[in-house]
Length: 273
Ligand SMILES: Nc1ncnc2c1ncn2[C@@H]1O[C@H](COP(=O)(O)OP(=O)(O)OC[C@H]2O[C@@H]([n+]3cccc(C(=O)O)c3)[C@H](O)[C@@H]2O)[C@@H](O)[C@H]1O
Ligand SMILES: Nc1ncnc2c1ncn2[C@@H]1O[C@H](COP(=O)(O)OP(=O)(O)OP(=O)(O)O)[C@@H](O)[C@H]1O
Ligand SMILES: [Mg+2]
Figure 1 (cartoon, protein in one colour):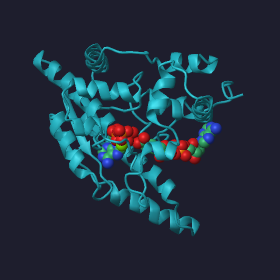
Figure 2 (tube, protein in one colour; figure 1 turned 180 degrees about the vertical axis):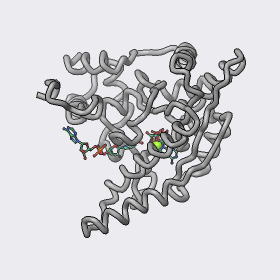
Figure 3 (cartoon, rainbow, N blue to C red; figure 1 turned 60 degrees about the vertical axis):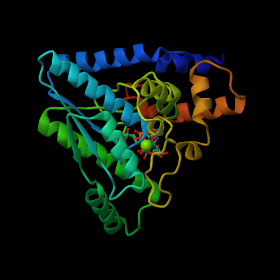
């Protein structure tokens, strides 16, 4: 195995193979234990209709149900955060049905995002690039989740996992801004395996991953943007041999996005040198 590959696998905590039922138990227990340790009143999570938030949402709901069953008050707020009307809204509704959250809300981020975009143009005299606007959508979702968390004493669940973390494929302080990460250490196919174990509809765990941040290309697939297939990223994270060009592409992304996986750089840091 490549030396950097070994280091990355250790940093991300990925196992070459998993027992899905045991991983579900471990993550539900983690959510329960952490909530009890903080004294917070529950969790909030944006549910997109994609597979990561479907899985994280179901784990959170199971944790809250178990806590409630043991006599501890706790809530789970699953929140739809569309930018206007999203093209795969039907999948988002199916995800909500599967998660069966204690509380569900819908919070349209379009007025906030459009306000930022209008002020950007007024400030700079330029119209914003679709890509930059996409990151505003992800950050507006973060702000909405923290507004709900602040109002209800909740913790914000993030869906970061090994295949997104290694590639830095998330918006810094957007979907990367969260309090607790129940999917951490899993690669993409392992996320899928947990959802299957939880008896999710196949349509939800077979769904093609999309950040869905662009006005111009709704539903653009992650793999198209990354130029890498998740199967290859997952193989790499499970310690398998992949094409040298693919390994180099993953490592290039890993090294270029280290700043996203740390607190902001100060003059005491040396990791970037
Ligand atoms: N070396 C460095 N040290 C410290 N900070 C550094 C830096 N380089 C850039 N930065 C900062 O980071 C910023 C760039 O990072 P960021 O704003 O995140 O932007 P960026 O990484 O360029 O874009 C986010 C990527 O994540 C993808 N994404 C986002 C959200 C969800 C999902 C999904 O899978 O669903 C995917 C999205 O499609 C896009 O490819 C720069 O503007 C700069 O402020
Ligand atoms: N339209 C949306 N409504 C609510 N939450 C959203 C929306 N888009 C993104 N999010 C939040 O941002 C997170 C990051 O998006 P990401 O696309 O990585 O995950 P996903 O959509 O759940 O799964 P997948 O990666 O398979 O598409 C989501 O897990 C979800 O919490
Ligand atoms: Mg998605």
